[in-house]
Image (cartoon, rainbow, N blue to C red; front, side, top):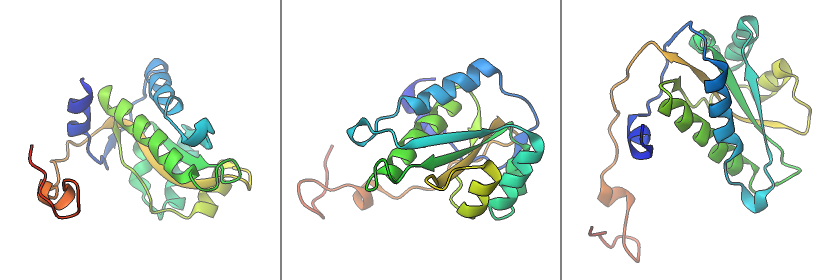
Length: 170
């Protein structure tokens, strides 16, 4: 799938088949996250790849009880290292996670960016050291749903030329 097709086809998937992801696909998806740019190349990121079914349930529970997440083959917990890059670690984690999400979609897998969680509980379940902060999570698996695209704001609401409010003409 081409890059723009992948971006346009990405959806938040909230239903998964209980099917595995081949190790070679998982490795490609994780490599996409590893290759993400970061401020000053500090790479203040760490991902916990949760594959054990019981552990996925514990993480889903810590994500405000969103138990549907546990049906995915994995739950990816994206953590940042504030002591490595205090100003940019959250942005750097977000960039890396978006790489992961798009790589997953390009291979036919579903994800759903999760921001509703108890960070301390997720960290405890995953055994994260105190210096790491959970920034986001995503299930990763074979979709069992094909959500329709959601509406997007119009160009004139999102883009302007040269100064705020000047229409961008393309």
